[in-house]
Length: 235
Image (cartoon, rainbow, N blue to C red; front, side):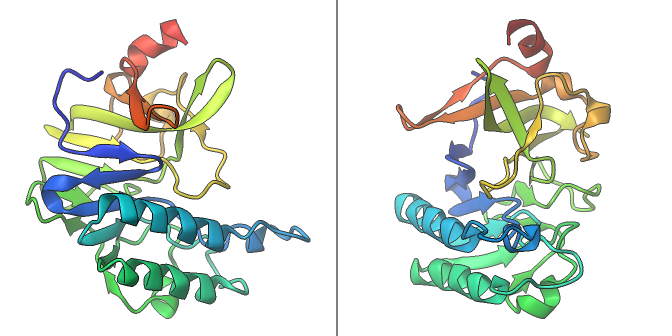
């Protein structure tokens, strides 16, 4: 467990920020299944909507922020994506929350599909936390950055599990929290043996200092591990 009290709480594949009355998800990648050219693709839009609705009921946030890559395809909108996006927007609105999207590198078609609030970097209501995708260095100063982009996963006893990464004071004195991909179709990058050079985000400058956490369904709590620098010797 990190030796710092975290003002955020991992919940499944999302991050609750109670002080900001916000829920953050990253790398939704709507349309990934349809874009895969599989004859009978998984209904990723329905899966995303159902899991998000459950999280909204549990956390009751005022704001839902997508930390980039809401969409998957770079150059076109696969059939059904606009319907799935509308259903996701309705899901958030029905919960009484506002939806904000910080575009990621996959979101080239976002402007044509989503007319809601967009911001390259979004400061949460706590005043200390900035959400962005993490594929570029942020321009907004913050005490804490919440990002996505790398789809982190931790290999534990032969099982590959989506994980959060928490790095205290790792980016110009600010904390960084990397969220796992919200889509269940992303295999994830196994972080056990990864060094800073293996991460795509420039905010992960010292991978050894990041604490991984995986969600434990049985306890309904995140399980924290020692920093990656130590995990390499333990896992």
